Image 1 (tube, helix red, strand yellow):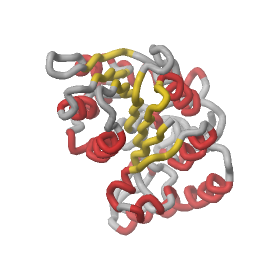
Image 2 (cartoon, rainbow, N blue to C red):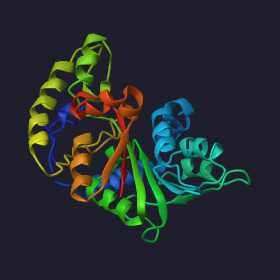
Image 3 (cartoon, one colour):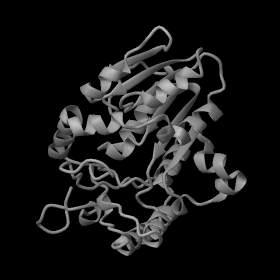
Length: 285
């Protein structure tokens, strides 16, 4: 993995994008950060049920089978999966997390069939076809090998079963424009009160056609900035929902709904992902 110039990157646009997987140095630094950073764990703990609203809407829409057994990867303090279990008393769940500080909040209780497990998304510590659904919300952008993580999710989910993924859209053509129009800051991408958004848009415009015309997923990686938490400064995968569409199509999975479709109806389902922001997508396998 390389970075633009010799200086340490200030934000994501200072980092070159490459299909090359992050090396051992980057992987070790990331693992240490997520396992030991108190700031990372505290930030996860601030997420309320409203923060997970789009995710919960998609889960409710697709997990209609009785007695579902669900795995959430990168569950943080397990607020999302607890909210799901609170209205589905027939369900069971496993909350998997790397951060020991976050994992302490994922213990079970008599009223919630929830089990906390320490684990790595690239090597899930579960037998094949163990779960009715695998959920990952704003996790895959922090993984140094997205394809391997998705392969692992496919391995542990039952047939039929569901994979539900929420991710930001770092490659969006809409978000930079919205930031510019609203004079919004997104420091992890070099945007301060709208300034810098044009540079971000130009990068994404160059990527959009390449990704759209390719039949293969193009997972691109960058140098994570672990000295600044929040806003995806620490992300390593340049998240693009079109990559997931390509990946799951090649594996025979069917897209059943998205958060845009639930919010806007058929029009949301027709809106190209390049023109969307963050999204939640559900596949049936």
